Length: 308
Ligand SMILES: Nc1nc2c(ncn2[C@@H]2O[C@H](COP(=O)(O)OP(=O)(O)OP(=O)(O)O)[C@@H](O)[C@H]2O)c(=O)[nH]1
Image (cartoon, rainbow, N blue to C red; front, side, top):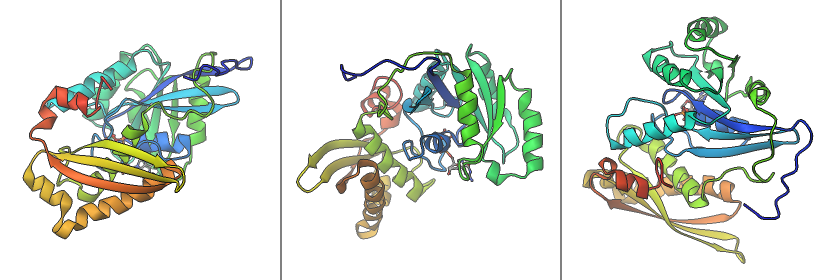
């Protein structure tokens, strides 16, 4: 943190940590982006998209809200799953507010009940968020509320859509009301504490997950090897490696005559140029690293879960 940072905050300033939890695909990353008013976390339809404990900071004249976007809480079935679970549960400790998202367009299920059981263990304030209301009728929302209310002892209940932004400001107000009075923890212009290489790698991974859907579900990792900025041309040269587990997956990602990886590159570049505010040259390579997901050390080397 910059040493000349001014920690002073006005009388009545509220600050604190908030964690968004919910079963995979409940809309946590999308809500985080809606709150921040820009894309910070990646989103996709593939469950367990989020692999980092991610901090985004929203600073306004009267509050600072620091958000931890947890991986979907789920029952572990491989080493990667276990790592995620541990970091998700850790994120529940020591936060001021736990906001649990439940997809309003799907019936409340055992997955939600399981997450709610974990939420109950937290001493923090608990906010229930019925998400994706643009996908459900008012009646559906009402019956979902009925079902979800009993899952834990909620301090507040809100509904919102990250698509139409309906209710997003209301969610922010609700959370801020739950935060204690406190200091400004981060400088005003700091929006995330992730190293930029990690954010860039996540943006690339998002494009791959979106392009291939179920064909290469969790079998990929992206690592940015080099990022060089040239001021004169306002160009970021990025070299990244996409790791897969099998030769067949390498073939899928590269595609016929390199068509698939070229398309991924084009789409990722577009997003990265927006993120970085520069022109971007992107060099993508694919490498096979057998069983990397089962090896916890590898998982850490890729920067997932704890130990970044
Ligand atoms: N229509 C609509 N779709 C949404 C909304 N919020 C999220 N989605 C979609 O739901 C899918 C999952 O959203 P994510 O934000 O990635 O979900 P997540 O809870 O972060 O998922 P994990 O990272 O797997 O835990 C994506 O395809 C989003 O575009 C919403 O308010 N309305």
